Length: 137
Image (cartoon, rainbow, N blue to C red; front, side, top):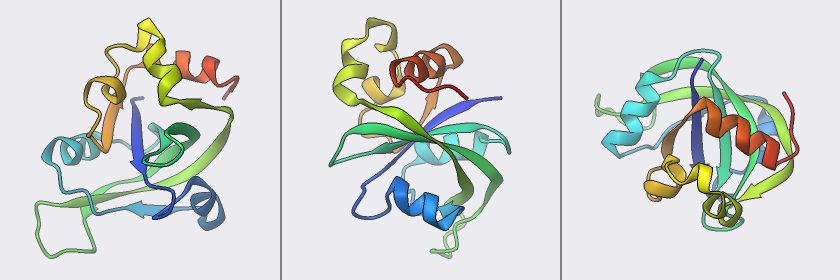
């Protein structure tokens, strides 16, 4: 199993909307590094759902339920989508400030590659963020 982090601006698509929808396709990614991360996702992988721009915090955990396919919002075959479903709310959302303050997370994509909308998360990082958020799976 691999772990990921996906960013969404809450006014465009929020964690609460994903919970209401029960599943969504993640589309609109137009960055090659983020796209390559999505191509590497496998069914069953876990994803931190991060509110960007407003909130700036990890608010939930989702699961990849369908591996990459052509992004339905474009005819350009360079771009893909994946499907995710909500798994669990973070008991205590973990802020970007808290992540940056934790030395063990200094190499996390969220810290190093701030503009990347879909990043990798190492297992030890995933587990530490869960602990920081008082959340168990």
